[in-house]
Amino acid sequence: MEYDIALLPGDGIGNEVVEATIPVLDAASEKFGFEFQTTWYDWGSQRYLQKGEMLPDTAYDQLAEHDAILHGAMGHPDVPDHISSTEGHISIRREFDHYINLRPAILFDSSLTPLKGVETADVNIVWYRENTEGEYIDVGGRLNRGGSTEIALQSSIYTKEGIRRIAKSAFRDAKTRSKKVTNVTKSNALSHGPVFWDEVVEEVSEEFPDVRLENMYVDAANMHLVQRPEDFDVVLSSNLFGDILTDLTAAIVGGLGMTPSANLNPNNDYPGMFEPVHGSAPDIAGDGIANPLATVLSSGLMFDDFGQSSAAAAIREGVEAQVSDETAPKTPDLGGSAKTRDVVDDLVTRF
Ligand code: ATP
Ligand code: MG
Image (cartoon, rainbow, N blue to C red; front, side, top):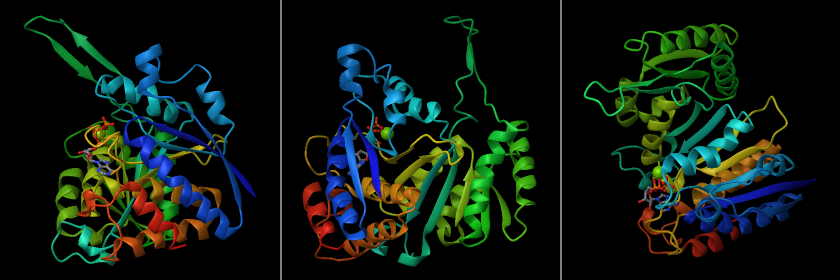
């Protein structure tokens, strides 16, 4: 088997963490007997600053040829955030209709969590964040611009099919895990979209009689995640709540350097896009100290998507062994003083 992987490192530490992941791909392919080839695309904010575009016109056609996209991050201090993201990686999610934003948060060692009394095995959450509609749809505008009566409107759009497909993905996964889906909602205060969301999720849950549906308001979920993270397993939410609360779950398991993500659509043939939850981190870019593990773990999600589950498991086990080894190199965000490269050099010896 040979996989064809597009590397889209993007900006800032995106370049460092994607490059650092390649030796891990090599080690996994050697051990598990498959091959892969890569094509490097240097699109992102540098291109924007030179040519006024984040991606070339042909970007989607080129990316569509591959089996997967391994992305770093897009963002630059001289490019407005809404341009680098909406014209960069978010446009790829839209083009390929990546409706699933899968964000697992696993506590690989209890030393990594700021929470007291939480043990390693306690936190293993997988978040299903709706990725194509909801609150982040670009609908709205401004009235009476500049005047004392100025008004801004921002709408959300929830479609029945949009809710159904993400809910189904979460329920399907829950069947293989703890058989519970926690639906994070705010239907007590937002009376149209989230009420509809809950109705459709309830309908989908009836197709999965062996999976329990738990509804939780986003404010309560925020508190419970800190007080009893062990109660969460598969979590389902719309775009906005997933965006916010997955930064909290990242903090619970060791920070942005530890949290991978996948953008998927199992119903079409486009490649999935795998990327760390973090951004381009301009404050540490170029220093060679970025934690590569979020991107390494994202490559694990890519192997899961390829059906190479042994390679995916080996990556997670390698990371677990490394972060729980007191003598292993760790980057500064995990309290160490190692370089990105040292972490990878050590990790590949654990295969
Ligand atoms: P962007 O605009 O691209 O989202 P940002 O300024 O929001 O960038 P993030 O990348 O989201 O920055 O990072 C937020 C903080 O977390 C920064 O202080 C950054 O240094 C730190 N951070 C993020 N990712 C990592 C990593 N992989 N290793 C170490 N520190 C990280
Ligand atoms: Mg950011």
